[in-house]
Length: 470
Image (cartoon, rainbow, N blue to C red; front, top):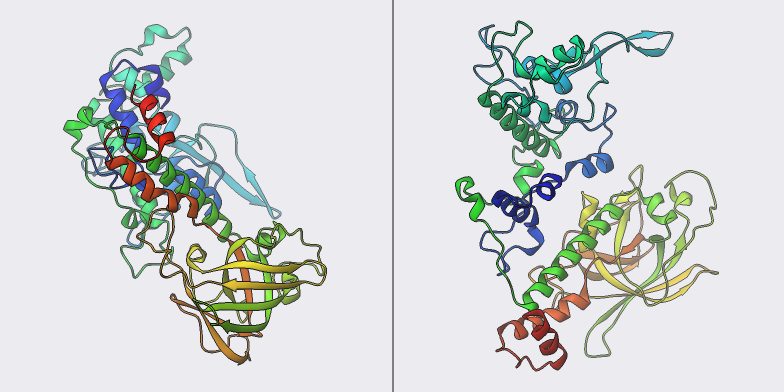
């Protein structure tokens, strides 16, 4: 984006801007002439939040070396580079400011001593688990090719810019493939490196959900689960986003806002249980009563319970903490059963905690923070909150089980369709991620988008639409 801002007059700038504007959250909407997709993958945030990285920094070279994609470690060399000495390795050609990062270390008296003197070693281009006896301390934040290589290949960076012999030697490293200064770095070398960088990102994405000790599911990585429709690179400059109606534009903004709030909710779901409770936005309860009320038009499902300090049941450290509750009467939330036989405690039968987003929807009917009493109205939302409706998703159906639960994991067990409500079971309440206000706005916006100008039936919309189209 910085390059686009610097060169707004270039026709390629619009294509890059359009590419960066593609979002999976607005797939299938009429304002683009290409399939919307997650064209840009933001990995650094996900790596920081979900993984314990072995090295300081999130440079591309040392990050990809930590991921096994289920088949191989990543290697930078492809034929003919690094083949039997006939061609230098890519990591040797582009050592300066990129692959020159290995620093030796030693163990002494239980301490790790890193050798900061001398020139860092060059990473091997072979596919292997890297950094066995060295540490990637140098150039640890690089995520793309240093621009000096491109300027040098175009003869814009030459020794005439040097003021000292050291500066001249440094410039020559961007111009020549090896220290012998016999062969210049070519455009083909640069293009090969850029392709390998793209391949390294794909390798990381494929390894994000793959265990390092092997994998039985070759399509388990992130890149296999994110839809990315192919784009014709030769027609990249023709890629443009059309002008949509006011209604369709509002719909897209609503989808983008909901997608952002959904991702924030999933991030919270993935935090440890005690951290979620300590934040005040989640709470643990033990059910004291569960019953159905079918006296009205619809069957209502209720759950009474006592709020529980999670440390008293083995979540987190310490005892009898004061928990700042942000949960109030009238809040919409989701309820999920806890696996009391697990250590540490976790959600029962769901696997990835991101699935909490589909847990049973509840309304906090009553709540007394002094006594710890809470009553939940558990809703069957199958008729109106569905996965094919914008800005909401489907949710598990509540089912009351008579009697008192026994054992740490009582039967019947919950599944991906049902939450069992029963006296004696433990549950956790988490935030509700659906955007019901946006869902209800979509039919009106769809009708307005299809209406003739000035005849939407909503005078405020027609007035704003007139201003939008001027």
